[in-house]
Length: 318
Ligand SMILES: [Ca+2]
Image 1 (tube, rainbow, N blue to C red):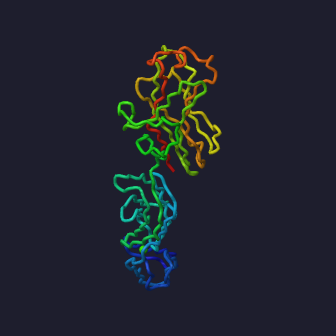
Image 2: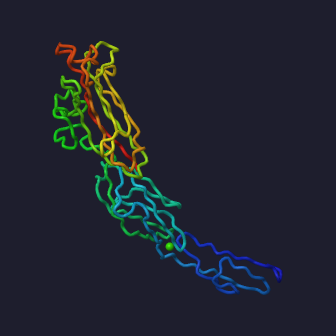
Image 3: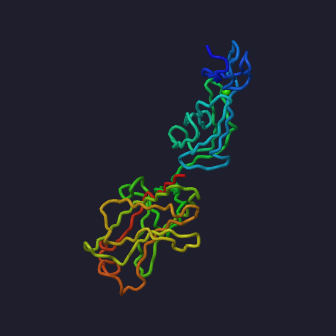
């Protein structure tokens, strides 16, 4: 019971899967909530109907033609006449992620054991509480491995690397870190000689991380603690061969019984084509050569300061 002149506000709340249509009776029509003043006995009914209108959804990431490395950043715009309850992200027919509230975004790490690298039709599906489903237009994009070095383990068919003759070596497996191929940067017994191996690589402009790793073993028969003049330098170069940065310099003092890993952050070079360059060098003047150098020592056992290189990887995420 309301006294005449009492202001009233009615709010119609639809059950899940239904939507408000209109009021019946009284002065309310489509407005919800509806406010009016009681001045007579009034019967008012809220009319609901099942929601049959699917959500509208579009995929905003990835974009057509895009290449992503090892992970996909999904993003979708979705709306519905009642409300979106969830958005699903697909690669072809494989469900990769579900988001239940805006913003509809999900970062999904690619699992090549589940889905091989390749080109896929990516879609988003949006649902409402009534179970209506809206599907986005497909976006064709490519997923590739985030490891950018080709033939990182120097296995046979090593055309991906450019090297001084004899540097790229195959077997025995005990000489390699993995597999049977490796890079052997030894030095000819000539002052000023160099050995090198390199590979160009292009880092995507939107790289978030770019982690270089290479495994190196330094063999030397020089007395412990002796620094040889023969060196190996690992550098990052531009396409003209100019040195952009030196990652490491190694000599006999870095001798190791086994391969050891060297890691570097190369994210500073995103958006650039760089050359990963490993070069061993001997001083040009024999007079500079210390006692441990193979020019001075005549024993064959002492003649090898060698740098063994294997498993060069550059893992990039976007
Ligand atoms: Ca709907």
